[in-house]
Length: 321
Image (cartoon, rainbow, N blue to C red):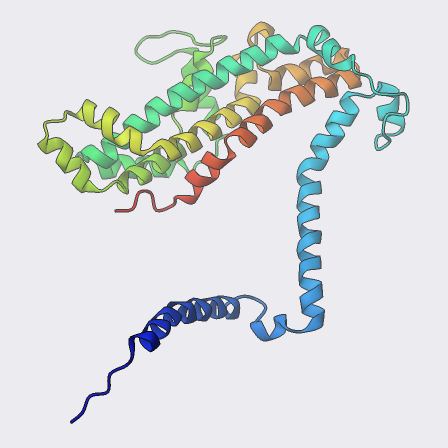
C-alpha cells in the first residue's frame, strides 16, 4: 500500500492557516453571543446606528461624570450674584480669579485640608496594618479558630452602620480597659476606620490566591512568620494594597457624620465638616470655590492611580499559579 506524502511547501501554508481559522471562529462565536448577531451587523441601519448609539452613550457618561465638576469650577470663579441669577451662564461679570485665594484665606481652607490629610493618612496606615495582619493570620497562618473569626467578620457586613454608631461613640468616650476619652483626637477617627470588615475580607481573599507552594518553600528555607509576611506576602499583594489604600483615602476624605461627632473642636475638623459649618457666614461664591478645592484632591488621586486601581479591582482571581 503506497503512502501519499504531502509536499512541505503545501503542508506549511495549511498549518499556518489553521490558527487563523480558529481565531476567526472565536470572533464569530463572540459576536453570536452578543446582543446583536453577525447577520444583523451587516444591515445598513445597524451598521450606521450602532456606532452612533455608542458615541451618544459615551458623551452622556462624560457629561454625567465631568458636568458637575465643570459647573463647580465655573461657579467657583463667578460672583455670588451671577450664580443666583444665571447658574448656567458663563461668567456674565467676568472670571473672578480672586475667589480661590480668598477662599483659601477667609474660609481657612488650607487648615481644614491639612486636618483632612492627617485624618486620611492616619486612616490609611491604620487600615493597612489591621487588614493585612488580620488577613495574614486568617489566610496564611490558618489557626483553628480562623473560620469562626472569618464568619464573625463577614456577619458585621450585614449590620447597618447606624446601628453600631451609638456603641462606637460610647466606646470612644471611654475606651475599655484603659478608660481614656479619645474625643477631639484623631485617634477617634483612625481606630474605627481601621476595623473595616470589607477590607479584611478583600485582603484575605487575595492572600488565599497566593500559591501555597511559595509559602511552604519559604518555610522550608527557615523564614519566620514575620519574614514570610514582609518579604513574600506583601510584595505579592501590591495591586490589592493600592486598591484598599485608594478606597480608604477617598472614604475618609468624604466622611462627614463620624468626624462631626468625635471632633467638635473646629480647629481639628476636616473639610467635609467645616464647609457646612462656615456656609452661614460665607458668600456662596467662596463656598463653591472651597468646595472645588476639596473635591479636586480625590479626583486627582484617582486619575493618578487609576491604572493600579482598575488593575487591582480586575484581579478578582488574585495570583494565578
